[in-house]
Figure 1 (spheres, helix red, strand yellow):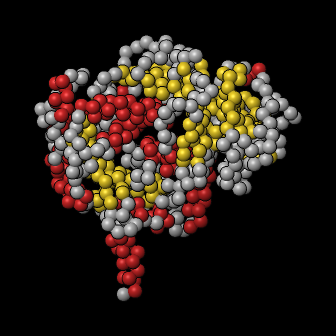
Figure 2 (figure 1 turned 90 degrees about the vertical axis):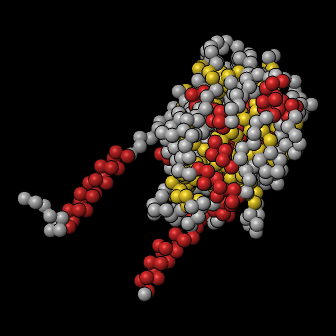
Figure 3 (figure 1 turned 180 degrees about the vertical axis):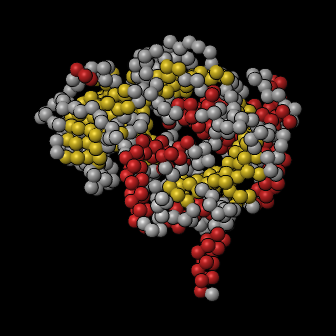
Length: 205
Length: 398
């Protein structure tokens, strides 16, 4: 019985604590995190494209599905540390075969997007040829660009949410930006996406 | 005959030790030997040896850190990790094959009575100096060895925590007669000074400004009538980092933008003669934005112009840093668009997007030590590259 308790507290309990990796990690104690699943980045990591550029700490998945985001398994995650030893931002990487389903969960959880940059595919899909020079016709086209709806979220190059938690210390504005990229061998016609998700405390605050 | 590890348990240890020794030999790094200089110019002869990251001046050893962008060198006390307070060294260095070569060092040069020797005849750059009481500073600007500007910085008094050090920075592009724009000079971890330059050399005396840390945040102090952009904290943290100051990876956050949009192959840098700069010309930079929420709208920046990006020739990762800088400019455009007052999109707003993107691009390239201009630099000839994106690519191209 005693042995079972040890197993429970050492293996299962941490998994439960860290199952969901989201904006809350920005408010966690760094000491608590860096000696568990995150290791410090090293010189050799500079060429590792799974790590945000020059991150401080990096998560290498060790236990299957140890971390998830909105139910999606996280392939890699890394974060930056600010001067006062707080997590300033972190990025994570997930793959999904159902991008629209993913963004449905995003809207359920975080509401409507704040700002985005639609991809060339988006304009192509909506039959819009972007103008190359100024003219009245050009401005008419620009004024008629449709605002992306949920189905289009996956067809943006980047899309951003502003997240504000309800209770302290989470009641601060967090930027949540997602970069969309079709999974290797596919294009934007498919639902498969490689998603880079970055949570960040606003720097200018 | 088989050798059993069970029969000879110590054999394991012996083999392990041998392997470790071999591994240790393979991994042993040969210390980098830097040029040894005994010419200290003014004052007594001083023996200076730089070996890897160790600096030995006479019999004192210091940890040495070379900056990546500013060429500045900081002397740290190896025990406390703090900058050495009582020794004022000014190091002149030049870039040689992307390494730093020390030409000269002058210890204890308080008072600013140092002169440039023959090696420095071609020195273009800025040197900060102390007054005799060591309080206030002035900044001297040299162009090809000649003092062309001396600026008093009376407001830069000592503050708690401020480390009085001297840094210098060769002025990038300064010798390029066609160079217009702002040159930033790092004074200390809390201060930057900006000079504007036009075709005739340095602009009028009053056309410079600086930023300082007032204890609670950054404030920008400007001289003259110019409407300088406010300087954000990050730039200074960035300087801090690049000069080997306290580690603040906070600043790298600036670069935390995916490369999913701008392709590195957009930036084909070529050296421009012997100016020490390299240029990439890009045409067709455009960017769509859209916002949702309660005030939905969309905007688009026309690919109206060709941009000429200039970076120091030695700068590594030029394509990657450029792509990230452009991504950052796009990001700032998005934020600007997101925060526009809620009103129907008017033509004027769309025009503003073009102006804003231009502003952001220039600002972001300044941060990586370069310049962005709509005008080709003198002597440049070639064809601009088309702005390309990574969409549809399977791997990043840099």
